[in-house]
Length: 491
Image (tube, rainbow, N blue to C red):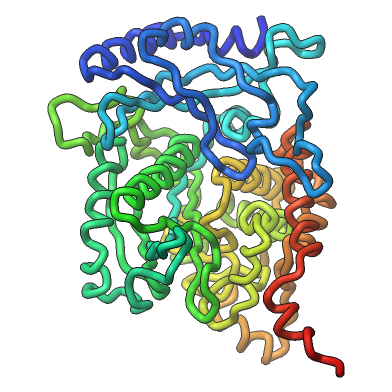
């Protein structure tokens, strides 16, 4: 049995396919987006009339392999990852992700897992290793099996900016003033964030809090942490929702890391913990008798034992042994992790613009925002070296590999740094910097076999082709800074 066949015939999937048909009929769905995630976290896929649900659920749809790399070409005119001679992947919908779009109730979406074509000469029907979403499921399942059910739960904090749109369609500054936590500025964006929350709740988000951050038009809206695959799907969905609300309000929903210098960037901190046990609970955030999606969309993993909790008889703040090992794993591999968490050329503007709490140094602490990792509360830690352009599926996969290495090798992270890291350095502490450019981070990734294992086979090839090309294109471009600095430097 191929990977594709095993996926389609998984126990209970046939009942889920039937449940989706009931939802299609109940909600009056006529069209479905079958979507998966590219190497840069773009949502790609196909639209198919809902009449064909059963056939597509069993047979899937085909799309060129290059769609996993946005079907982009490199600076030499070559397609990234896969050329035009390559086969077409098979996308198989995961019915547990089926949900109606609240802004057009004729349309639904379903996330998909990608496989090699059934007629391929090599590994027909195998899992497509450039499918970052499928990779995350496999890597987390392997982690759970290796550690007797120990599993990750994660919450993300996506900052983004609502920008005004000029007559030319380009950004014309932030909508609001850069006043952090000011309710007045938050209120100025109320029509926007209330619509985002409305759509998010309808699509299964358990929204918990939000605020205005300290950049023009910058908001952060949060939802409850959960299983890593579902949380990644929700972050991808959140970006779709923001893009739709921007269209409705003639604004730009900007997730770029650093649109403006001199103010804070768009970070996307990851708060994580490892658990055993727990159970699925429905959170009916849709506030309606008829949920516009299947139960899996509204499920959250609750309860169980948090293995990151401190032992109060030893230290009320320091994580337990497994937590410390995981911190050690992150510290061991933080250079390579930076290539995934800060994945664009622009990401490093965030690190160079000092004074805005962006982590620059490879250290850890408690409530210490000058470190790349902090213990944000008892039982969880916050990985801070990540921005809102992140591919969450890749980010979680590489963090799981860092955790695995930390636990397997019993890595000691050393003592937490409680001082401002700059003060600690002035006092003589030797601290390593994070990579300060995309090129440097990619070099660190290339030298780290543990983290590369989270991007298996074709995934690593596609990712590095895409990102090396991005770095080369930047270095091969004359910028406004070049002109302003050098155009009249000699008579």
